[in-house]
Image (tube, rainbow, N blue to C red; front, side, top):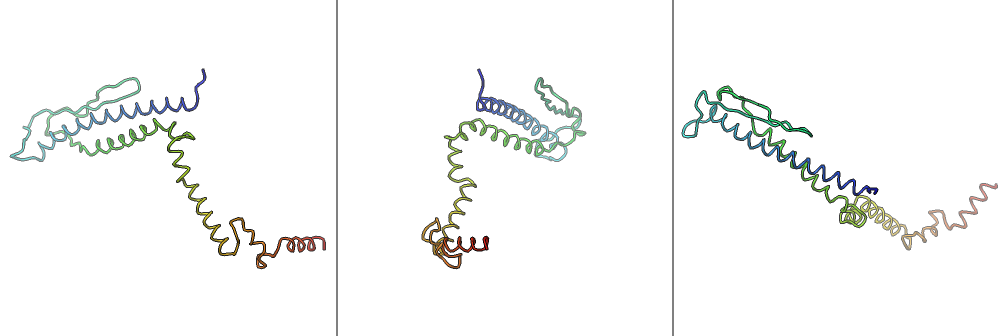
Length: 184
């Protein structure tokens, strides 16, 4: 059985959505870990009483995750005394999380793209009503009607344009002039 382009695209879109969803979940987990780590390290370096303060010599650890298509494993970011722990601003992970969310939303929109952009789909119908080509056609049509109105043509087809002497006169007169010029 042969698969159609639409079927292949649907499988592709589902696979991309699944990957985007997994990446987003992994970044949410990392975001939670980074927030915890940041609050622990910041509490030692910056916070003062009455806020909770870590004691010198306390151990803090931060693990990340390495994900491949075949495997996933933890990777140590830092393990050691809190006073030597490097700061990890959670904004770094949060910016990646936002990008992953945008990717997830785009992948979700692609799930229905095969149906939405098919000739009877909702987005295709809207494109036919509001697309750039429609706007260009409407602008050209409006300009043609305005020109016809200003030049005295009776309709959009410009039937009265041929009758105007400043535009070359009638077609018969114009053809006779060309014939006389060519034949001498």
